[in-house]
Length: 527
Image (cartoon, rainbow, N blue to C red):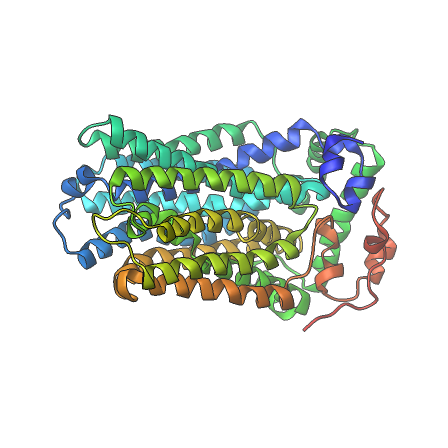
């Protein structure tokens, strides 16, 4: 038994050929996942930059009141989310027209252009806003394209871990950004502090562009665009098997049968045809609504409130100096990397999606509630040492980060990219990503004002996010089924569409398919 088989516990791992778990699939997944580092670097960089006196002086708001400063900082942060929202929706069209790989390359170029604008803004808020919006177009497009591309290339047994790498790259980017800010504060002087930090946001974009240039196109996109010979060659290469191998041929047959089956449901492949297919067929509608719901929930945990404003939040908890706040933020980033790595290695494809979401909902809520009670009843006093309860509150921030990486962080991206049908996958992921960015915008824009206005020292902010965390348990319990180890083409058996018996009888079994996957329900319609 291989090491991977000992770690990943699902039926597909026991039966699928071991050759498919080869270096190519890991390399192409990591290349695409620099899209996550792109997002993460921006999250981490901008929060620290906004705390720098040199940045505040250059842009002329150092002497603003608390509320005025919070408004301006929220505008700077949330401009990127506005671009991300537009970019994630627009990427759906490009992904289906020119392909996943070229679209990721264009997303990287947009992010680079936006980075240049930000680093060269020289105190001009207009240039900063334009740069962040353009960068947002690239980051948003990449956030939709990466899970789509990775899930379409990944073997089913480790699809959760490979798609979840996107979240690992996000938290890695955040962590690196935190330490860049900390290093610049200690060693750089003047405007070099914030210019260097903003310029380094472009590094993941360069890595994404170079990585995608040498990577293959998605075999499922090639099949969808009727390039079957290229699809066969590409799939065989990614699976590290001969093109004539029964596993490759069975997977191609499943893809072909699924595409033909979906085309019979509603003829045509235009935008409105796909919309009708998504919203009038119960199984597709269920999947779209679950995807949207998951992304709303992910953002309403409050995770990006901490990600964007971590230095300010640590100050709010009693770490008064900029240096100590940035150092604590750096430790926060390391905790997230370790927790996400552990989840992807040991839990994503073994414990599964549903259980991970359930237990972390409760754990996150408890952590947020403790912080809220601390700030409400024993708030830190200016100039005084942090009390023991305050250190526990800081630990709760770290635990919240770890809990998020064991559930709502990576699982949402895994889930929304694997459950849609082939024809609707790009549209479904685009809608989910756009929802994520819309509520990311809401959180980024509201949190600074909430910290000033919702209760003394903003204690109510933590209760609001904690309450959302508790409510997510019930959403998951009633609406989110398990999908680990199920092939993309067999999601109909879980979520329902129309009669799938005919399709299962006509299509040959993939070698190693479990009995649950072979036997589709007679009629699996769900309302």
